[in-house]
Length: 153
Image (cartoon, rainbow, N blue to C red; front, top):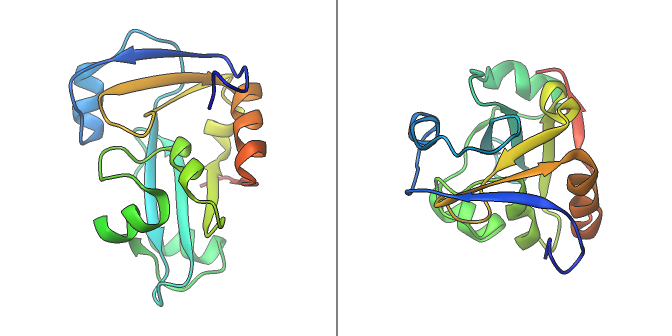
């Protein structure tokens, strides 16, 4: 999709990674802000969120729920992740929104990530990392129909 729409990016292949620690150890040699991508659901399972924060940030789910005017937040199950974003744990990233045709997942960026000139994310698999600049990312999001909510987390 990125190539088809002439959205520039860099990609680095690496061994499979499942955690931030794995990703840092695999450390692809490309530019970009390293991110943590978290798939969350509310208490009733009616709202779903893809939250993108700096890789070393610890999320306060209670505070985030208040900010998002949501009920209690928890991690979405692997089954729910597959159903809504079409990926498995370890491959969650902004690019998974390509699979969210009904726009059921709310996209939330931490301000620091959104302000980065370039960020890193997995391309629907955990065996590579893509670096994409802000303009190309905005183009990707426009194509998927997702409007990010940018907040200070």
